Length: 268
Image (cartoon, rainbow, N blue to C red):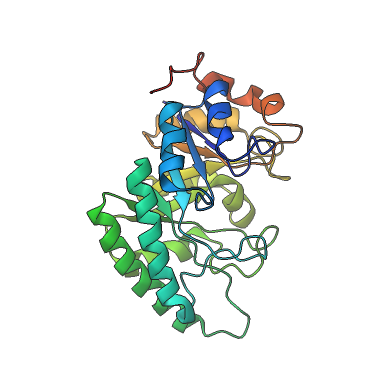
């Protein structure tokens, strides 16, 4: 069964963040994800999800100054304490919202940095974070992000590089976030990659390429790929992390077969 989660950091952005939950439920989504909930209280985020009958599928650990271009700092040795504090905060939000999957962003590595030192810091930080997350029933996911189009300098842009880190961390609750858009750019051959890596995948995200617009725009055949993912036995959420070309609702035609036909009654 294909289960879609609306990424509220990219969809329904004409509305205030907490109002996007109702919009997602009205559109037929059963779950949401987002980059960062930390501008609102954990209780308010949890209430918005609960009142609209939505699961919270995923969000990121604190990732620094997003507007200034930061994309996490888990691998930065100078920010290890900050990363640990971020884990504490994220787990508070996870407990409040019932979210069981958190994305830890490694960050951008400066050209003159010692990659081995950064890797050691990342592995050490993730081991501690994973142990604490396990106590809350939470899985951490790591995402290869393409460095050619979207985030130059990001710490890893290929699945094998992420899996090397995951193997070094050696915790059962650390898995791969497979973003089809990013990995189509970095690697290609995404269907075979999903087949091969399925046991190690903790979350999937989708978008069209090029342009990062609605799935089905561009070169990736989601009409074929989504049922194929389902046929492999993937049972997790699939995050809709794309930039609508002309408004969220106007571009949801591709998703209609997978959305609820009527909104679930809110929980009061």
